[in-house]
Length: 292
Ligand code: ZN
Image (cartoon, rainbow, N blue to C red; front, top):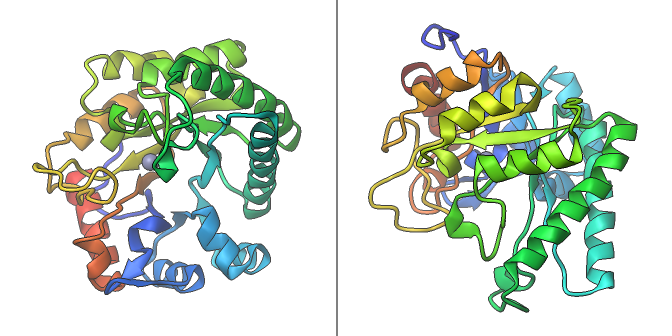
């Protein structure tokens, strides 16, 4: 297992972590400049942030600073109620692959979606099996396209509390079942993003990480699970402030040969997004050394 205590060369910042500073939305260009100042070598930006600054401007800035992208957030949201909805998701996902290529991302992260309409507050139906089939079909189709552009797809299983509205793939086991079905050759074109926030509780976690192996482990996301958690989405903790044994999980992932970045991904309306961006980045660097 790599020693992170001496430096932060393997730290990546998911740009949602510093999306806000003092409660104010920050342009991605400023976030990238700040990461570069702090000697951070990798980021993982969100599509809405990239779109707000312009894809060309961001890809230029990434190249200027020699930054790596540990991932690109995100594609997915496959399920829909009708053909037009499925087609819209299809088209949007193809654009996401193209953007990920332009930015030179390691992988496109997939949050697969769940019951159509649920995210907006009103699920169109209760048939989660139907959504799961649409997810399988959608990933299969997108994989064919992503292969032609050489962009790996990383399925991110989300914690079961998001099964209705964000992702109906909720365990690493389920994500790997999809990988085995759609990419039985383990070509490297399809794998998983292991986010400790989503999977830390799973009694099968170690076994499934071993099952994934290096070929399927495309991204590793860290933050912490706070007790109590006051918001289902935007109350993620800084590494070391919660109950997740992050070094243990990182050890399992690295035992399989994973040697990529450790990506800090914290959504925190009430705490970290209220603080000063540079102070948050300094804390990320410290905790990366001490608690990852
Ligand atoms: Zn994540």
